[in-house]
Length: 214
Image 1 (cartoon, rainbow, N blue to C red):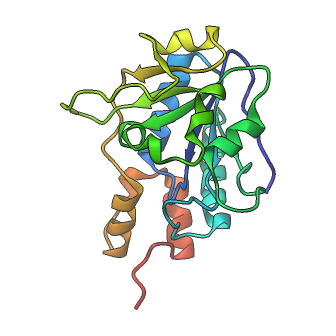
Image 2 (image 1 turned 90 degrees about the vertical axis):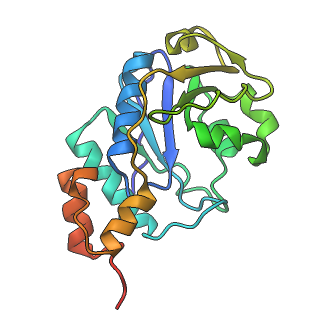
Image 3 (image 1 turned 180 degrees about the horizontal axis):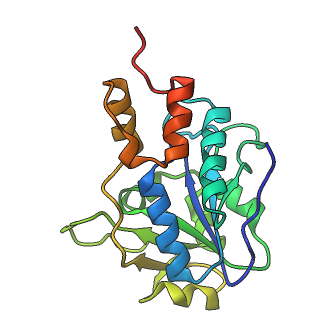
C-alpha cells in the first residue's frame, strides 16, 4: 500500500470509514462535500482497526476497493495513514498526524455526531479540525447541538476561513444506503450492483467477499 494525500487548496476534507465495502453512499457524500467546500479532492481514510466495530473484509481487500473507486474518480483519494499506525484507529490521533497548512474538515454522519462524546480523547478534537455533518434523507428529528468546543456556522464555505473548531451541516442529503445493507444483500445472494461501482462489484464477486459461508 502507498499513502495518498489530498490536494491542499482551501481545506483538506476527510471521509473516514471501514469501507466494508465502499459503496454509493460514501461516494455521494464525498462528492457533495467536495463541491460544498470547493476543495479539489476528498481523502477516503481507511480505518484499519476501528475500535467500535470489526471489519468483515481484510484491510487489503478494503484498500483495493478504495483504489478501484479512485481509479474511476481521481478526486476521491485513498489514504492508508491509519493502516500504518499500530493499535486501534482513533480519529483524534490520526488528525493530529495530519495537521498542517490547511484546515482539516472531518466528514461525520448525524448518528456519529450524536455519539461523539464517546470518542477517544474527544476533548482534543476541536483543536484539530472542523466538522461537516452529513444528514440522513428525510430526517425529521431536530439536529443535535454542536459538540463542546465547536461553533455552528451557516455554510460549509465558511470553514476555509477558520483554522478549526467550526461545524457546518451539508445541505445535500445523503443516500439511504449502508455497508451492512450491502453485506446482507450479498450474503443472501442478492444483486447489490446498484449500490456499488461496477469495479467494486466485480472485485467483490471475483474474491467471494461477504458471501454466506456454506
